[in-house]
Image 1 (cartoon, one colour):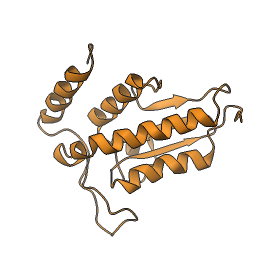
Image 2: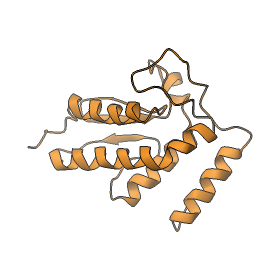
Image 3: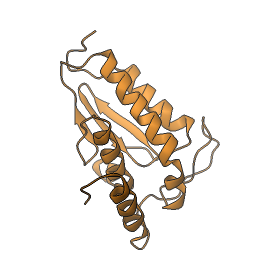
Length: 151
């Protein structure tokens, strides 16, 4: 089924469900054909809230998606096309699942927030973001081990 450029709410909920299941400080927002990923579990109500997330993890998410044949802007945004169908939505959900499974340790080790219990347990995650350049060095090393060109 073609979605006429609209990313169904149910698919966005599926993506957020993957992040919750793995306890990651990661969420998807958007409206209509626009989709954005944020490496934070805090509420997104403004541009400042969106910038609060961990940019290095968002960059790694981008590289992992591109390596899997999915185009997502490096800034964490995608505008979906009317040519996409249910299989494309499933492919994105599967790619997010793989990212969550393989990259979960990075969310803990580089300060992207504590993992959350699957349905929340009242804990507040630590602020996201790099710490003294360690994040950039770790992610650059990972990137260089998997890809021929890295930032």
